[in-house]
Image (cartoon, rainbow, N blue to C red; front, side):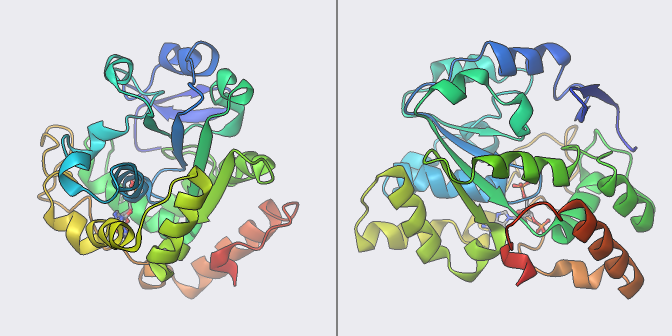
Length: 286
Ligand code: A3P
């Protein structure tokens, strides 16, 4: 594994970004509010894209109002070290982020009326995105070998732990009215329709012009050019963007440029085996 890490309840976490204490607090003590909205993802699934969409929806497409702080501070990861102080200052309704798996998520959520939006992505594209991320995020030793990285991902020895367990865990909530799931691929294919569905889930009504603004300011191009959303303000000692950009490609299917046929077939076999008990055909499988 190419980063300093520790285990908490069977999941791998990056040292420093999280501590056992921050996770225990997030799980057992953190108070979820009834009007909170949680942007839940496995890393590299489109977390920041969803932060932008949700904040724009909250401000009815007004970029200035949703853009007051850089995106990595706008909807903090509530389980990460050092985020609580900011969260306590936030006005309701709060939009918060989390990478936690279902079995570690805030206990108080399950007694609340708060809502979760869970964004998933084709795991092959996550592997590629995460692989490149290891080259720019300073907590990592750059992964040298793509084959080993695929293996680490399969075994959950990467940032975020096991993708398979993450998805299977959260999908237990798929029929809960507080839970909405969507895929990165659906966002790519139909961003306007996705925004409309998200608004409906949140019980918010935006008019056509407001929806158009949400769409306009959440495109890959717009977010890449916007210094409040492109991560350019993250200090170089945390992320070295001379080696690659956080806003890397923003497409679905880039795995085809990285996986050999043999690696793809091998991953598909592992996927079938690990996901066999889940009765959902995900968008990327169609
Ligand atoms: P790539 O590395 O494949 O380009 P996260 O926010 O969960 O860390 O996910 C990062 C991934 O989402 C990166 O994928 C990034 O480029 C992509 N992304 C961010 N904003 C996007 C947008 N507006 N449209 C499409 N992809 C976006």
